[in-house]
Image 1 (tube, rainbow, N blue to C red):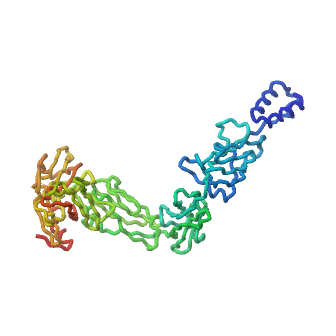
Image 2: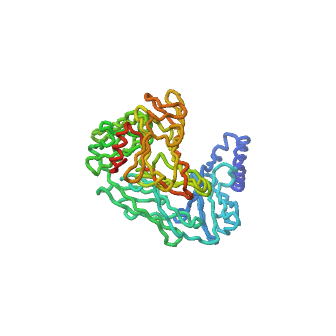
Image 3: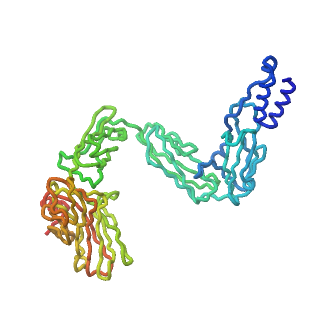
Length: 522
């Protein structure tokens, strides 16, 4: 191919794009000899990527919407000169094509001059730049979702939140800023730190804690609106210095060696412990359980998994010193004393009728149950166990006891207490309906605080189905509901307090527990 023809064809490439280049290469291969063309044509370098170059002030405004698109908010009438970078730098053909999916919303000309036209209709336009001649779907393009508002909606409040309140040197923490109203034009904020010697925060709200010389230091992180309103929100965080624990000692108040037994229905417990030095970074302690089918542990928080024994160990990694506590979770022990707001097993069964419904209110040490109206003369409010199965063992803990108010003391002429329980022993025998009817409790104590303790002796009170529980194996109940029903002579809802539901080894243990609460009984 003569050189002049090659020059003419190159001109066509720049005019028509990469398709012409391919044609040129095919033509040269078919018509040129090895002797006179190799020095004229060189391989073309195609673009591998194209990205927008946005000034920092503009980049701060970018946010990602629910679809994953990168969005640029603009106000009607705003303009912006867009620029881009093609890679690699040595790309042969550098011409690009600009496009807008909705020119009535946002227009862009062949030089990258972007103008916000109107926020009406869809309110957004997809603005794209791509190398000229690249086939659709090549993925070699840069796209911005330009969201246009007809007028600026300023922020009225900003709330800063995080997943933690403190961190250690070197830790990072992602902060988020909630801007109200939700229709605010700008969805992002400017982040700042009150003390960059303590912690820094980047444009994305990622806080990085510094290594500090003091044991701890506070820092305030502020998120400021980008709309010129001056509206800001802040959050104070604590940065701590890492201090290696040299020794650790777990308190033995829950130790099986001291006679304490854990109840599976309690779900878990929080161990107390001390370290040397006292200001040690406790998160450095290594916690292990000897049997994770019985109990697991995470930073001193124990979660019960099953019956048996497990030894919990805390170890100082720098010295190897450790401390242990042995926990025992026996079959048949039930304990609900309402001292943990995040967990209680027994509460109201959520009944309703005749315009009223049951509800419960937690207090530290008891829960209040509100009744619902069955009819003009009858109220009802049952108690349901939600931690199922509930395990009973007539040999280990034969006394099932409930401490609650007696509604007879609140004006009821009569009431029925019934335990609706459905379960199966480990050997497969089915049991249901403790006592087989109403008011089948074995003992009832009137306590000095006005409450009553109703006690079922599982060695004496038989189930309606199955008879007496065996003394040599446990029974897991998938339904366990204390029906506090047929409160006669009450025309409107009342409330009663439920103080605890527990099992005991002996009647003497029940009595001792009552007196341990500072009460007398009769």
